[in-house]
Structures are given as C-alpha cells and as structure tokens.
Picture 1 (tube, one colour):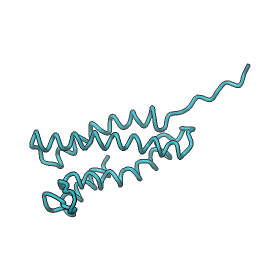
Picture 2 (spheres, one colour):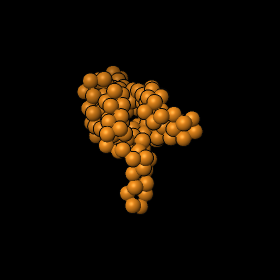
Picture 3 (cartoon, helix red, strand yellow):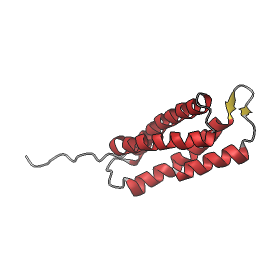
Picture 4 (cartoon, rainbow, N blue to C red):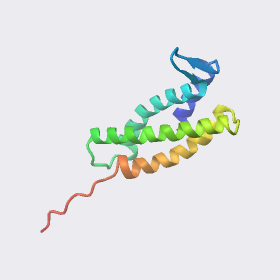
Length: 129
C-alpha cells in the first residue's frame, strides 16, 4: 500500500506535471496515468510478497496463483479507478487525498480476494476409505 502511494505521488507530482497526457489518439488525466503506473509496480511486488510471505501456505500452482492474482488486481484497479475519478470529479478532492481514500477501500477488498480466491488453501482429499 505504501509503495503504491509513493509511486502514485511521485508520478503525479514529478513525472506528469500537466493536467492531461495526450497520446494523440487518447488523452488521460494526470492522476489516471499515476494510478496506472503505481498499479503496474504494485502488481509485481505485491504478487511476490503475497506468494512468498503473506500466503505462503497456499498449495495452488504458481501459474494458477498468478492468473488469479491478475484477475483480482484488475478488479481492484477498476474499483480504484472509479473511486479515484468519482472523488476527484464529483467531490473535487485533490487527487493525492482521493487516492488515499480509494486505496484504503481497495486494500480491504483486495485482502479478502487474495485470501479466499487467489491464494486459498485447497483441501487435500481424504485417502482413508
């Protein structure tokens, strides 16, 4: 969570200094670009930390965990994107403060997705007749 916030803040304040990033065929708000960059970094670091530190007892194959983690991250990203835009556009919050609120909500939902979907422990079948 802290890493994502640091990357978001760094990209928002120091890399993307204008209000919009125009790619020629589509334009993004600066806070959307910062969210995408932070989500990319957090995806990689988060998967490794969750797999080897937080949910090390999971007996699912690594590729299954990675695919499920990707699905959970995509849903978290969508929730974060909607919350961030809603807080900035409709409530007129500063993007960094809006990201703090959105992150608190997304981290909570993400933990439960990781625990009960991505890194869940499959029950071993009983071999006793």
